[in-house]
Length: 291
Image (cartoon, rainbow, N blue to C red; front, side, top):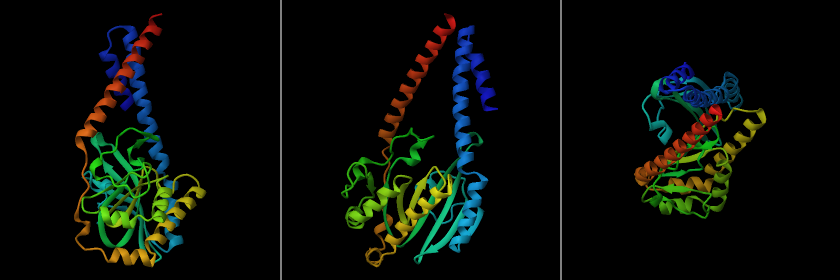
């Protein structure tokens, strides 16, 4: 359906044979990209993946929920950025006395489309400041980063992780972040960052990705579980729980800000570049067809 409408639009906008072929070429390219994205989501969140999560619930002594309307009390950005977000294939279990939730988000978008994301939520003993370690996974489409980071650069904090540890902290939480992110904790989150973005909001650590924890092979699932288990172990360490329990109850009320102006400039610049490249390709296609 999408490819058919796109092709008709290309034909209607064309004037001569060369332009018709060039328009068709552009529309087919766009249709192929849409199909590739759809296939990627179908594979990433296939019934086999969901069945694997159901078996994970059995192994952990947890509970598997096929569909849950709404997002519950989760507050990370992907849960709240758009109305009409529901959870599916959710596994709840307890490890080292810590509540863990593994699941997926389905968000309604325009034209009847849905955006699918995966998450892991690890509960903390106390609310903490809003933190994000933006490794760029949620800004990717088919493995390519297409959207710049939206968090305001004035809230970026260096805790010893360098440029490859892009940490953003809500105002007032800077000292907390410098104490929370010990060298060992930074290393643990760096390891997690190979597969997930990290957001800490309210009383939970969220690991966020475009790809389900259970997609791929059983070996990959085992590696992802080891990452989660290691993080749970660190969050349940008596020294960590004591530190978190001693934080003020009002400490976690600040919010991260988005840099709207910078985002608009970067997205606009990217759009101009894409249009220029596509225009060049169309002109080249016309030349080849006319020769």
